[in-house]
Length: 193
Image (cartoon, rainbow, N blue to C red; front, side, top):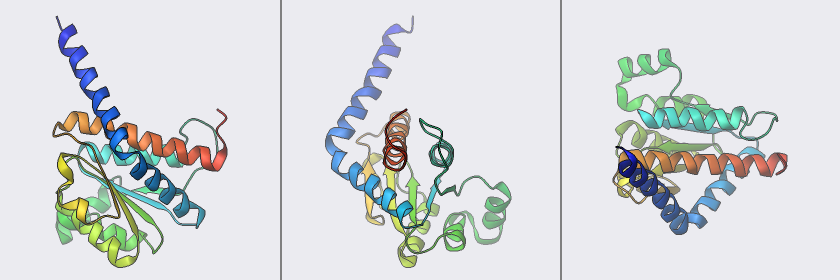
């Protein structure tokens, strides 16, 4: 009953991922190099997103702090989406638009790297975080979709999935940050599994 739908769904997701890498391999390599340089220089990775992208932020950080493919020491990364007391206090005291910007001000320092994950690129709290990061000398990279929205103009590197389909954008984002985690892990710890 569902065979045709399932086949079409999986093929659409796969084709989008292949289209993304064909169009963005150089940018993805630049993001990987920026991530490696950040860690080599003794700085950290900060990651933020809303909704499903908040889960992606946490997943990406787990791959860096924990393990991706091999047992090894953790890498310095923090998901700005995980502390509900902090998130709700900041939302209550400053407004939801400030929940990430305030954390960037508190936890970030010049030389860090802030990843922002958004299917639309128009979330006010991510836009504010990007602006704060720029003022602080924190590098920025974004995983986006739907043309990149306003955020693409505020970050150093925008990786834009060429789709308007939120689920397929999110699926491609997972492949993107898995590839980043894998490349970073290989750089620091070798490519043997």
